[in-house]
Amino acid sequence: MYQTDPPLPPKDILPTMYDLKSEDPEEPGLPDQFHLLQPRLLDETFRSPNYPSDQVFTASDLILYYDLRHPLWYKRPDWFAVVGGSRLYEQRDLRLSYVVWQEGVNPFIVIELLSPGTEKEDLGQTLRDIEQPPTKWEVYERVLRIPYYAIFDRYKYELKIFKLNGGRYTEVALTEPRFWITELELGLGVWQGRYQDAEQPWLRWYDGTGNWVLTPSEQEKQRAEQEKQRTERLIAQLRSLGVEPNLD
Image 1 (spheres, rainbow, N blue to C red):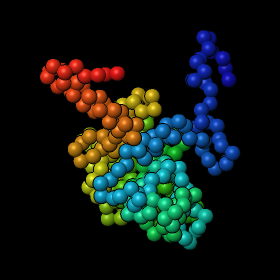
Image 2 (image 1 turned 90 degrees about the vertical axis):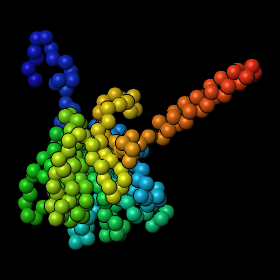
Image 3 (image 1 turned 60 degrees about the vertical axis):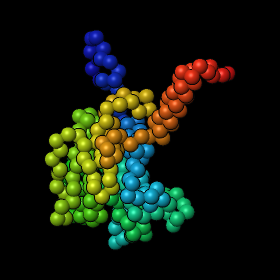
Image 4 (image 1 turned 45 degrees about the horizontal axis):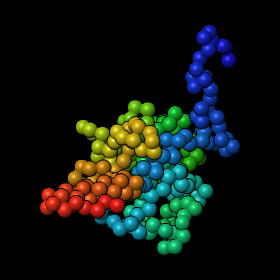
């Protein structure tokens, strides 16, 4: 590579995970940290009041087998959720994959996180040979008929929602980066905040009051703060009665 004067910063010239292939020649590259953390936040905040926790299964980058006639064909969604089925395989085991013809329940929503290597396929803009497996878009729309398909662009922080309508996906016109899903009584939106010490826009779920669903860590902090406030109110009440509380 031609050396500039002054030299370019390393981050501008060194290869990224999108340039370096994995051991599998068909893979465009390895997941980056965002593709690891963002699905975790979706998992932690996906709590639908319409379904008990044992009837909700979520997964990220898990192999999804979708066609019994072609049992070796699969997709690996960045994140998907199944509701109304079992959280565990045969009620007891963690899954190694998700095989729709064995499970009997298709995903209800799938989310793809745009990256340079997969953007065209995620948006349904790729063409395929008739003998090749269908694209992600075709599988989600025509094979599995997944009711909702969401795409999040982490570089533009843009959310797109597609809803199955008459057998085809129709993009939902969003007036704000939020979308309410009545069947789940949950909404999906773009949240500006700090997660895992990283401050940036994130995709997460919100409830019927419009508030973001808390992660377990946030719930613990909230409980600690509420307990602190109760203690402070009690101390103030005792002192107003002339009683000095023992704080040891």
